[in-house]
Amino acid sequence: MNEVIQSFHFLRPLWLLALLLLPLVVWRSLRGNGGDGAIRQWIDAPLREQVLIAGTGSKRLLAPLWLASVWAIAVIALAGPAWRQQSVALYQVQAPLVVVLDLSSHMAADDIAPDRITRARYKLMTLLKEREGGQVALIAYAGDAFTVAPMTDDAATVIALIDSLSPALMPVDGQRADRALRRAAALLAGAGFNGGDVLLVTDSVDSAARTAAQALLDNGIRVSVLGVGTEQGAALRDGNGALVYDRAGVPQLAQLDESGLRLLASAGGGRYARLQADGGDLHQLGLLNPESRSDASLNEDSAHAQRWRDEGIWLLPLLLLVALPGFRRGGLMTVFAVLLLPATPARAVDWDALWHNREQRADAALHAGDNESARRLASDPQRIGAAAYRAEAWDAAIEAFAKGDDAVANYNRGNALAQAKRYDEALAAYDRALEMNPKLRDASENRAVVEQLKQQRDASNQQQDGERDSDQQAQNDKAYGEPGESDDAGESPGKGDPGDAGKPGNSAPSEQSGDSSDQPASPQAGDEQTGDAEGEPPSSGNQGTPDAKAEQQAQEALSDAMAKALEDAAANDDAAQDTSGREQRAGAATLSPEQREQQEQAQAVEAALRRVPDDPGGLLRRKFVIEYQRREAEGEER
Image (cartoon, rainbow, N blue to C red):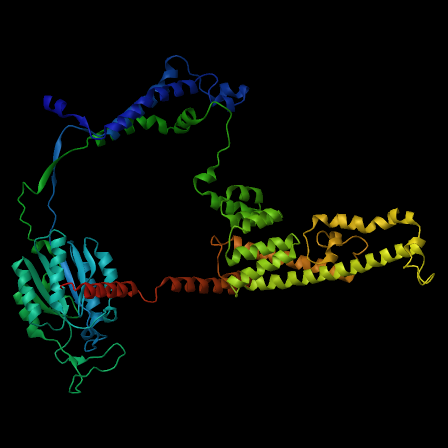
C-alpha cells in the first residue's frame, strides 16, 4: 500500500487546472436555480409555478453538487492517475528489402506477354502487397542507378511509383547492375541497418555485378535474383521501335541468362527464382515473411521497457453512474441551459458561421439575393463586385472589378461600366479582356452591343445638336430679324434688340449644358450638351422616336446578357474560368432534362480525364536526367 501511495502520480497533471473552474460551475448552477434564473426570464410569470420545480433548501443544492461531482471525476480521469508500471515490447521486425529493377532496353522485350517490364511491375506490386511488414526501398537502373524511393514503411507509396516505371525514363541505356547493388548497400547503411535483403530483377548480369553481390554479402546483405524473360529471348528494339543491330549487322537479342543469375544469387547468399504467372516464384525467394529472415538479435529483456499505466479508464464507470440522472428527459438540456444561457437578453447566434467560412456565406447570400450581406461578408473583390452589380451600385462594382487584371475581371468591369453608361471606358475594358483571352465570346458579344449603343447615342447627340442649332438660329432670327427680311440681317448684330440676348429663350443652350455636367467627359464637342442622352431614358419629347426605342431595346438586351454572364461568373469560385465552361452553362437552360444529364456526365468524364496526367513518370524522368548530369559533371564515383 505504501508503495502505491509513493508511486501515485498523474500522467497529464495540467488537466487538474480545470478543477479551478469548479467553483464557477457551482456558482453558475446556484444562480441558475434562483428565482430570477436564466430559464425563468423566458417563461411567463403565470406559467412558472406550473412548469418549474420549486427548489428550496437541500433540494436546491442537489444540481450544483451533481455537476461538481461529474466535473471532478471527469477532470481526474483526464489527468491520468497512475501508480503501477507495465511492460511494453520494443522489438520491431528489422528485415529491410531493397528492390533493384532493371529498366534497360532488355526489359522492353516481348518474349513474355505483354512485355517484360509490365510483368515485372505486376510481380513487384504483388510482392509488396503480400509482404507481411518490413521496410522497403526501390532502385531503378540501366546505364546508371537511381533511387526511386528511399527506405520506408509505406509500401503503398512504393507500389504507386512502380506503376509508372518504364525503360523510357532512363537517361542512358545499359545494364550496370553493379552500380545498383552498391547504391542499395548505401541505402541500407544510410537507414541505420546492418543487414537486409536486396532483390535484383533482371535478365542478365556481368562479372562486376557478381563481385558487387559478394561485397554486399560480406556486409551482411543478402542478394536474391528474380529472372525475367525466356532463354530464347526476343529482338532488342530502340526507343522508336526499330531493331538494334551489332557491328556485324546481326539483330541483337535479349535473352535470359539463367546460369549467370544463379551464380550471382549464390555469390550474394540469396536465392534465385524465375518469374512465373503464379506466386510460386515469390515463395521460392522467401521474401513474403520478413520476420523469418530478420537478423534482429534482441533478447527478451532488451526488447521490452517499463511504462506507467494510465488508470484513469477505471473512473469511467463511476463517471457514467454519477452522470446517469442527467439522462432523464430534459435533464441534460436543463444543465446546458443553466450553465450556458446568459443572464443578459439573448443574442442571435449565427449558427451558419460554425460550418461555413465568410466566402461561402457570401456566396450563399449572393445566390439568395441578399446583396448587402454578400458585400459585407466577402473579401474576394470579384465576389464583392458581383454583389454590387446585382444591387445596381455601378460605381462600387467598377471599383471592385478593377482590383483584378485577368480577362474575366476586365470583362465584368466592362459590364459595370456599360451599365453606368460609360461606353468608351466599357469598350476599353472589353478590349483588354479580349486581348488577354481572345476566345472570350461573351466579351465580344457585349462589346458589339455597347458599340451599337454608343453609335445610337452619338447619332442622338448629333440630332439634338441639329435641333439646338435650329432653335438657336430661330432665336437669332427672332432677335435680329426673320429670314429673308434682309440679306445682311445676320451681318449686322447692331440691328437687333440688345435686350433680346438676355431673354429666357436664349438661355436654353446653357441650361442643357448644365444638365450634362454630371455626365462623363467626351472628346467630341457636341457631347457637351447631350443632357440625359447618356444617362436616363430620353425626355418625353423623344420617347416616340425610332432611335430612342432602338436604344432602349438594345440597353435591355445588354442588361439581360450582362446579368446572365455575371450569374455564371459568380457561381464559380475561380474568377478565371475558361470560356467553354460558360458557354455550356449558358446553353444548359435550353436543354431538355435528358440532354442536360448527358451533358453533365460528359463534363464529369472530361474533368476526370484532365486530372489524369499524360505522363505519370515525367517527374521521375526529369529527376533521373538531372541527377545523371550532375554525376557526370562532378565525376562522381558510382
